[in-house]
Length: 325
Image: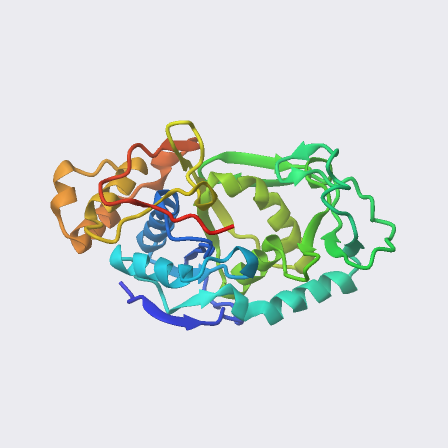
């Protein structure tokens, strides 16, 4: 397998000519990796390696107000300790800010975006959809507000795609989500635009990630179409939930995966992903575990599943420290 590199790199600006598989893992540096994010990393990594493709690591560091100091180093260190080997240096999403702005300018020149001065208070009473408040188009015909975000125009033409694990999906963005933000009021590029541009620049042709992001996919496909990008394939794996059925997440102070003796946690991840590892595998070394996983990986065992019971974390997990308010 190619060796991972801890050195940072920019996101490639030339799409590979071949159609070889290229996947990625793209955590945000809002805290250390928890068990739920480990599941996404393992699934995307094994699918890429099983298909003799590349696996890229991209740190999505474009939201400084939410970034936790030291999180990038902690994420990279965890991936190294758990034996992940990525292709080339890991990428920082912030390094492609110029490309994000160029894509935004393209959307503006083509008349696909408009200024929006609506505040959270303005939207407090609107209906709620998969992506939050369904924007009712208050500023579509213009606004006099000085501080504005930029929204992309949408239609009710159904956006349809077939997810490898969750089957046929369809969403009418205008009525189910509304025109959505591509540049925030603080002038930071919004997640949907940044991720679409970066996946295009890196030539990503399949995205394996948590099913909690599946409702975001139609909006990203809409941007791909407006910008003339190829559409990747998608495989949304079930998300890990706690005993109360709540998604494991950094915002909920999920346990960070342990840095000491990671073998047991890695085998637990394979078990939760339906790969049926033998009990003795937990006593093997990291390389042996990955060798077994690569030989036995079968992503279709997750077909139709939306949640995975995380269960009690293996010993050694530590709760995240809460950020000071």
